[in-house]
Image (cartoon, rainbow, N blue to C red):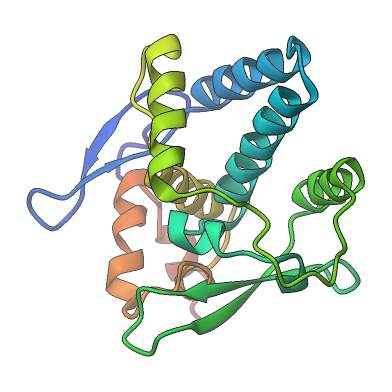
Amino acid sequence: MPNIIPFDKKTKIYAVQPQINIEFYSDEELSKMFDWILNKYQTSKTTRELKYYKKYYLLIKILLRTGARIDEALAIRPVDINLDINTITLITLKKKDKKAKRVLPLHFELKSDIMQYYIDNNINKNSTDRLFQMTRQSVNTFFKKMQKDLGFKIHAHKFRHTFAVKALMNGVPLNVLQQWLSHSSIFTTSIYTQITGMDTSQFMNKIN
């Protein structure tokens, strides 16, 4: 039986392929990030500053709860989020087939955050304007500032890895996670099973 790596330990994992380094956030690191940003907007002195930090709070929640690539997250429009049937549509910009779409279930916690954001900013749920009017460069600058204050590495793609690890550790089938992450091959998705130290004996024992 493989050794299971505790999720709450900061770990660098080398997958099956050589020189592939996958990093993800521990629960403690996530808690520190959310505490940092909540403190920032609670102590904001202007409405503009308050909206600035709340915007990044929601962006981080979307990255963490969808596994979206940063470009996909920044391209989200309110019309892509269906609050009635609880889905969020991401445009997969990385595909050869430009603007290919995938639909993910909307996490209940993320839905609540989005609805509150709409109320706070008077956003029409049918709007075709981008939800986040910012660039990838500005996001990187924000994360570098947070990283400097908190003392550990922070970047957008690390949220995607964290989403994948949490999904597998909570029993999401590999083929479902492949669809959610928009991996062209399930072998790419299977890298994350090396991180979780998944015990596959449970599946073998179910075979008659």
